[in-house]
Image 1 (cartoon, rainbow, N blue to C red):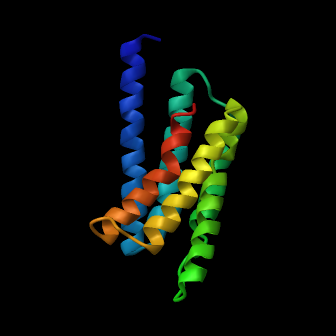
Image 2: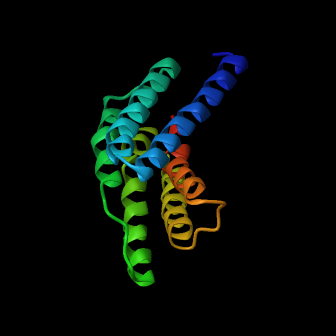
Length: 154
């Protein structure tokens, strides 16, 4: 594959991250199904298409769909700051682990740990002490953090 083609693929992966992050944020306003079902499905289909295009497809990637759906279905709200931190840590951890099949197939263990760190820290820091410009920016950022590293691992 040429460098030009690889760059086009990388730019298209950024678009996929943006689509998922948008669905994640729209699901935060209303209709959790947008983030859980549509977001998980769009991301997994994109993941499989990119991996087919790059010649790195594995049937294990299909497991990302139910795992991501499960992670995104976990509750993270609370009135107590301590419980918000605990629930958001758990949420970030499970969302990070949801893409485990990608890291296992690619044997990208260092990236797996980086990805989990990003998911947990973004979920906790943005979700508990939001310092972005708005809740819309916060949810979009959290959504992007869940899928950014894995798509570039294939």
